[in-house]
Structures are given as C-alpha cells and as structure tokens.
Length: 262
Ligand SMILES: [Zn+2]
Ligand SMILES: [Zn+2]
Image 1: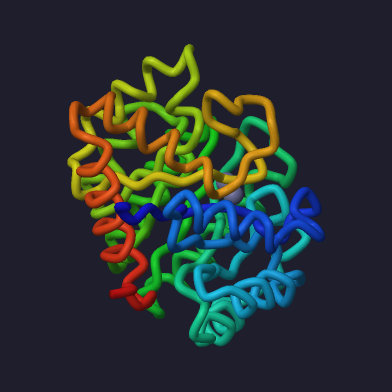
Image 2 (image 1 turned 120 degrees about the vertical axis):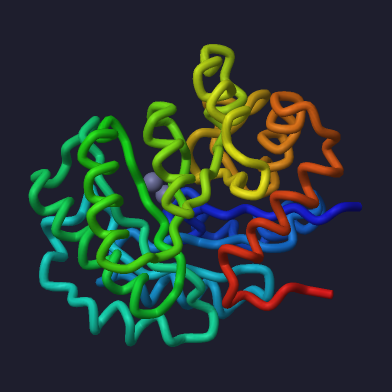
C-alpha cells in the first residue's frame, strides 16, 4: 500500500474525545501514516502536544487560529519559537485571516498573522495559513512579509481565488486541498488544483470538519484523506498511486523537521 498523509487535522477537538485510539487505528488501516494535528490556541497547546506525544504517527503545530486572534494578542514571537523547539512540533499556526466569520477584529487577525510569520521565518518551520474570503489582504501581507525575508508556508484548506493560489505559489508556498475539492459545486477549486505545480500540492482533512464525498456532512477523520487524494488524482489526470507518492514527497519537503519513515 502506498503512503498517505494528512497535513491538517484537529485531533484535540471534542468530536474525537475518548475515541482518539480508534481514529488513529482507522488512519493506520487506510495507509495514513503521518498526521499533523493543528493548534488553534497557544493557551491550549499542552493538549495538542500531549496528543502528538502519545502517537508515533502524529506531529503538531503551535499557534493561534484567526478566530481566536483577539484572545491571544499577547502571544509573542519568542514564545512561539520556544514552544516550537519540541521534537514533535513541525509547523507554526494555524494563523491567518477569516473575513467570512470575522470572529476576531480584522486588525487582530492581521497582527496575529504577522507574529506567526516572524516565528516561521526565525525557525524555518512552515506556517500553516488559514485564509477565507480575505484574498486581497492575504496576498498583500504575504508579499510584504516575504520581501522582508522568506518563510515556508502552506495555504491550507484552499477555498480562495486563483489569484491568491498563483501568488502563494510564486512566493514559494504550498496549496493544500481538503474535502471541499470533492464537493459537487467545487469546479472552481478543481480548476485551481489543475493550475498548481504538482510539487506544491498537498492534501488534508481539516477533520473533524469538511468530510469529503461520500462522507459529506458527517464527522471527518484522517482516514478519509484518501477520498480527497482520489479526486485530486482524477482532477489532475494522475493515478492514485502517483498522487499518494507526490503529496507525501511534498509533505516531507514542507514539514522538513519531521523524520520520514523508512
Ligand atoms: Zn483553517
Ligand atoms: Zn484547521
């Protein structure tokens, strides 16, 4: 069986409480050999790190989700850098801009994003970027910050426009597709997937949310990433095996701190 990876999930969320062993078993059975469980609050990072420590297959990030940006404006670059020194921390984030929900004031989201960018630049760890309905401001921040010094990043759960995808790639970023890629009405997202260079493509679940077809509407889990990979293969005209290989290679190139299993 080929190796699959889930570049973005939230194993600390209550949807998985008391079922984590089962969920990881499902992932193993589906050939999903590595998962990155993504931090949404630095103040709750201990729970995320504990999950990464409990399973060989699981690594984690550290950061503040844009929804929670205003709660954690006191998080400093130094704090993120210090927390990221742990062997299981392979990324910074998720941080970004979400103008769809606007749960934090936009200025707080932007400030949080810049703090996380600085930590990514200092550590060389990739920044996991959450961008929703904020294409113009995201493009501007990425351009300006990249000019100050490059940093690795991924635009996760890509649902923005083709221009932001193009700029992301131009700045050296990766584009990660979630179950949204499999939805019937996602022709525009599939078209973007065709335009992204193969060496920048990633797949993820964003579990427990956004389960791919045929599980749409149900609780998502890392094992389901195979369904998104299959649609990606279809979309870009490669075999499933080639897409597993390619997205796994890309994953280990981006999350370069993570040792690749033999
Ligand atoms: Zn996100
Ligand atoms: Zn997420």
